[in-house]
Structures are given as structure tokens and as C-alpha cells.
Length: 370
Image (cartoon, rainbow, N blue to C red; front, side, top):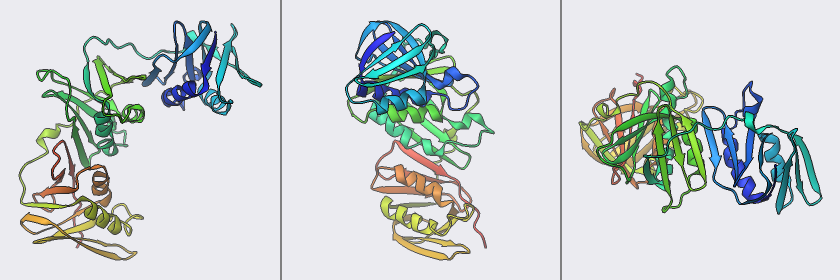
């Protein structure tokens, strides 16, 4: 194989596909990226759970072929090469010369045909959404995916096709995050649900453009899902298991409802949590009165008091939470004001944007200490 490619174009794609390279594996080939030059140049990463393939990279292909190179070394070499065009020349023993002007490396690669290409997924019937909207969907839900692998299905997010829209849901046992797409090009009669690993969605979120005009297409086949952007294709294995029936948990009933400034509520919680950082089990207490919400914390370090004006409907209430769960949700909400509904001191709180309806969060309270 012998190719000439612009350093920046190569590096841009290597930075993306390297996120699918295995970091802990007994199979050395999975620590590599594949450089494949046929009619066009493409690069690949694959850890057998997640595979990323670049689109065609503009390059001069003097001799077609392919070689697998250790990702960390090749990426660092590409970064340190002088600006301009890089020549990559791999012989039959996979000894690969990487050259630019007077700078030259020789590294030992592995046979390209031993590299496991990402799973093939048929692209005959897919779904389409806005790339920027799906990027936001990931950002506004990914933080509450479970990290405890005792229930593997909860280490991913439910991706649901329903009512002509795309829905993302994450659950970690203490909270639920829900976000639906603003729009989608999907037949309203289609209903489908799969669970996508959090790692795959995180990597997808990295590469999705924020441009409002860009579109994301995805395809589901058996136990894999393929996401296609303008510049990359991401193929992920799906998680097995039954996901929680979240619709039954988000109740419209309440005995207390408040509407409050998102920023002021967030700042009050962050101030109260300054005293609880060393003890994750120490809650902050919300005392909901007639027109104010008082946020207090009481720890061995000290106490805090914070009062914020709010529009309140219903009964007064005292309720406690792990402050991080409220803070995580408030940080990703775009609305200026938020609405919270309660049905009691030991029942979940539901948090929404006051004017925006396409996301909502359910958070379990902690028992108040006497």
C-alpha cells in the first residue's frame, strides 16, 4: 500500500475512529486502527462492541492495500508530523513507512485482513432526525445512565421509535431522564425499542455536528445499530434485557407544584451542596412554603440556608434529595424557568422545563433525618 494524504484530514479522522479502539484486550489487533486504501481511503476502529468507520478521505492512492497500525503510536506520529502531506507506504511484511519531507518513521504493522471490520448492517430502511437535536438528546439524558453493571441493560439508554418521534431514556435506579426529538422523518405507525450502550452514545455525541441543517440516519438490525453522519459511520452492539416501563412512572398527579428560576434554583443547590461533598449520603432539604423555596443543608462541617422566590400551588412540603441528582438535570435544561411537581415527602419529584415539553426528569427523594 502506498498513499499520500493531507495530515489534517488524516488526523481529524484518526481522532474519531481511535475512540473505538480497545484499551484493555488480549487481542493485539483490536489496539490498532485499520488504514484501507482501495478506490478511496478510509480508516477504522473496532473493539467488537463499537466500531467507527470514516467516510472517504481525499488522498492519492498510488498502490491499493491495507495495514493495521497500533492506534496510540500512529496517532501520536500523525500529530507530531510537520504540516502538509504525509506519505504512508506499507510493504508485504507490514513494515510501514510514514514520511513527510525530512521526517520519517518506520513502524511494524499487522496484516490488514486480520482486522475485524465493524458488523454489516443493512441500510435499506432507516430513521432520520436532526443531528444537532440528537446531540442534545444525548447530552440531556446520558448523565443518568447506571454505572453499576449488576443490571447491564441500565448501562445503556432506551432508544424508542414511537408516534413518529425518537425518544431517549436513561435510568440509574435513583432517577429517570427522558428526552424526545423535536421532529423526525418517521412513519407514525412504526414502533420499535432498543437499548444502546452509553459508550456508543457518548462517542456519537462527540462526532455529531451542532449544525442545525445536518441530518443523522440510523438503522437497526438484530442486535446492532448503525448511525450514519456525513463524515463517519458508527456501528454498535445493542444491550439485551427488559428496560423499565418509564411511561407508567411519570405521573401527572401532584399535591404540590412549583415554578422557579432554573438559574437561581441551581445556584442555591450548588451552594448547599458545598457542605455535602464529602458525604454523598447527606441530603439537602427543600422547604416549600407559600411563595418561597428554602434550601438547607446540615452536616458535620456546618449548615447552609438559601431562600428563593417561586410560584407555588398546593400544600406546603418538606422533602430531601441528593443535590447532585437535581443539579445534573438543571444543568442540561435550556428553559429559563423549571416546573417541579410533588405528591409527598417520600414520592418522586418530576422536573420539567416550564415552557419546553420535550424533556422531563424523575428523581427519588431521600428520607428526612430527625
